[in-house]
Length: 290
Ligand code: PMP
Image (tube, rainbow, N blue to C red; front, side):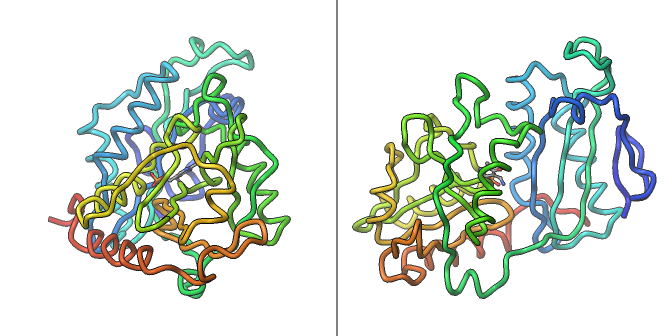
């Protein structure tokens, strides 16, 4: 594998960053996870835009333009002969001192890893996932806005530990007011009486790119989509529930905290959206090999 670091390509063994990088010392940096389908990078522009929004929020100057970053992502895929896979794009604050001051970090680092994706087993998509609510509260947006896709993912990791301790792959995070925010690495949707609902971003969710695509395809096919505050009660009594994320795509949820959702099987609306999403991934994206 050839890994991009600051304009050069390194083997896995040689792809290293400094122990004084504030990305490592303080989680001071940002990232994106991007999918490649059929020789195309899916929603690349949207991911790069979100990376720049995260950067702006933490006063980090990415040392490349949108266009340069897109080219570097595509070139990294090309060098690794990626046809279907996953890209991790990371920008760290760069090398500084042991102190917090980010102004001591003169050169942010850009890292691009393009490789294979570890997918959930196919049976899970057919059967649906069981999830739990974590006792870990989602970060307050006044403290560390969950819209920032930062390298500081401890809030998510603590909830993920609760999920795995409960024998689950995912967990719901509630915000400090008790409203549903999202999952540790996915946004959450419910279907109720033919309407689609997902928590608003202000509830403490990431502006998920898959979330956005699903909302668009749902609206195009005539579904009404709303973003109200949701409680666990709303999830428990939904007709259908599913998660969205770049890695997971759309994952049906059939049990939450021991409550069976709907029929206990992946629902019809979810199934339709899954098919529409998959169809989109087949024909969209930035071509890697011209
Ligand atoms: N929420 C969190 C916390 C995430 O890390 C992610 C990305 N894995 C998502 C939601 C889904 O966002 P996207 O659809 O852009 O991958």
